[in-house]
Image 1: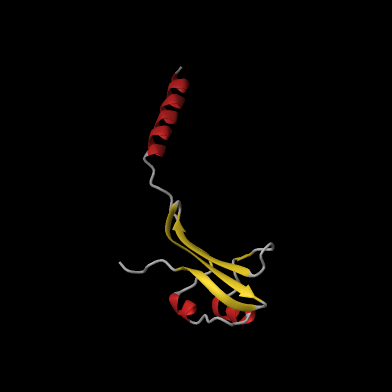
Image 2: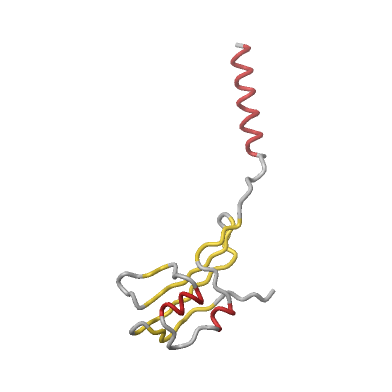
Length: 109
């Protein structure tokens, strides 16, 4: 009987202390292509695909069904909290940049 009481006490203490344990350390994660305003300012209509890759890097998403569209996605998060998120889509015709859309998150604070 004494062993059962000790086991139950230890189990109860383990359950109670596990509820009050501190949260585990969570790392800030940068995902995707880190594109900044300076890089976007270098884009010009008529740039070749290789010139765009030199400026922005390889696109995160290359759609096999629409090879003339490149998507650059960026997210900065920590656990379930997303701090910033942006998506820039570039459109090509005959290997030349014709337009882009999307924007970077505001850095005003």
